[in-house]
Length: 379
Ligand SMILES: Cc1cc2nc3c(=O)[nH]c(=O)nc-3n(C[C@H](O)[C@H](O)[C@H](O)COP(=O)(O)OP(=O)(O)OC[C@H]3O[C@@H](n4cnc5c(N)ncnc54)[C@H](O)[C@@H]3O)c2cc1C
Image 1 (cartoon, helix red, strand yellow):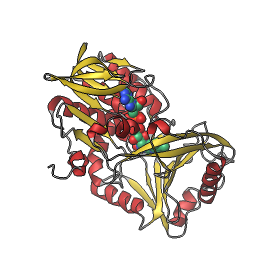
Image 2 (tube, helix red, strand yellow):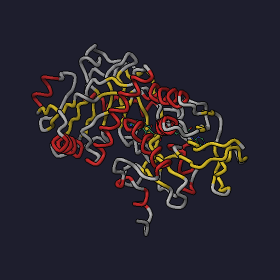
Image 3 (cartoon, rainbow, N blue to C red):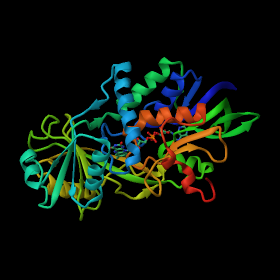
Image 4 (cartoon, protein in one colour):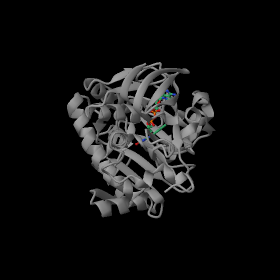
């Protein structure tokens, strides 16, 4: 059996980042993915993800985001790849919706620069959209888009540059104690002996690694790209957006036209599934529904349908991440349940996972993400 300091299981957003950070710290790393290294079947596919710092989900994420921004900029420099397009993010909601209130709070508490607009100001700034009279818009300039496939490729490059071995078509089926080390099984056969295991299996986590006892459910989410009927949706004229409007089935978010159409999706909207059973076909009624929702918000955006992609959210019960050490074996650490908002954090999650695996503790406070919150009786 080949020996390594650490095995990273899953080389998507979080696993590629963990492999890069472990290798940068001098660990001998084996990274394993059940599909090809860099594939399009996981939670990270779809060409764009929103990045923003005035975080309405919980103020405790902001220090992690500050570090994530630093690490994204550093990774761009290191690898020479363009990972971010900071065209700004516009959050719109009635003043009382969670998103609008949360963005205002985070920007005040953490001194994040935002521009607040009432409905007439919004209409003047963005004639492309139809805000309701009681809605406000909050524009954050140092926010925008992260390119997921490019970002994963950058982390993989960085991992390889520091000596990591990365294997595709290597499905991990489990690990067993072997003295003080762990033997990693590939399709049932022990192949690697390691000191630490870092599990980053995304939406496959609950089915493949039930032993971690994480209460994660998987949800099918569809992304849509439309050719706009006007030229007013390019990133120099229109930002990424998040509309939290009462009466919508879920918040609507999307991206300006980066040359492949205006992309839209509903946040946290879709049927529960199992990763291996994901229905990747998108029905005409689903497209019709999305078109109706988009037409009401930005009438000229949803012209001809250009492409669609079904993807998966890995949801925890409270929609916060599960990041920590396996309470049953401290040689195993994991990052899971990123609940549809994890991508922007990928480099800091990778750094934190490396710290958990190598030091047993982290520099930043991640107590609020501890999996112990799901297990009665654990501290
Ligand atoms: C439609 C959609 C829109 C989103 N929008 C945003 C957004 O705007 N902003 C944002 O910040 N986040 C967003 N997210 C969330 C973000 O994309 C995810 O949180 C993130 O991609 C999760 O990464 P991951 O590494 O956990 O999973 P993945 O990237 O899916 O990686 C898991 C990897 O594990 C591998 N694997 C699984 N099982 C095994 C096994 N047994 N052996 C070996 N390998 C295995 C898989 O093949 C895969 O490569 C969105 C998600 C979706 C689906």
